Image (cartoon, rainbow, N blue to C red; front, side, top):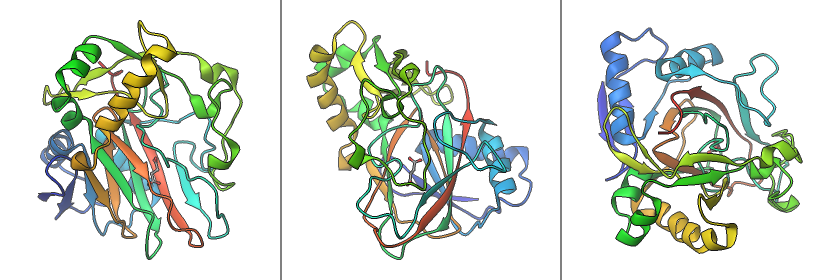
Length: 281
Ligand code: SIN
């Protein structure tokens, strides 16, 4: 197994491993260690079917089903991240900086994307290291977030913070919208610790974090704007130009990601699975 970093802060390419084969305990341990070190791993040339993708997901944690997004009928723990060539001038699933479903009481610890059909140009995904974000946080902001909780709500699926119609993803991703219970506030620490490395990461979410605990929306807004800006600076990001057959896994506690929407007129299909872990702590 060869692990090469993609940038100074986040992402690594893993070569010399066949994810269709059963991995030894040592190989699994090396992958868990690599994910902790790099927050995102990409495995080129895998071309996995869904059963193999589920097996890989289970190396990291128990696969889980997510609410609000319609899964595949044949496997409710898999969603198709699909935009058809005919879906133009619409938003795209994941097209804002976020970690997955942080508004849940126990959000998915990590996610997997399996690239099936990729545009010749565009459709890249970006990740931002929240370890680097925390470690480079100006003192004043660090004093605000240390020991504080942030409030997360399922904004796109609720009523109070529902996004405008034209920013929503196209018909290929079917979602439940307008559910008032998605507006329920959930509190997670604004700084979390990776249990393996002991490193700390900023844990706020530009889509789902609506305010900081102990502050109302108005007081939180300028602080959150600064945090989101700091957390997504290009200096702490990597950008993956996908190849069909690649499989990518990432840590949702330690990174944010962003799907670019620059490939109208071309079909893009990836299968996504997620795994559960300990609640953010
Ligand atoms: C996601 O947010 O999981 C989707 C990312 C992508 O389509 O690149």
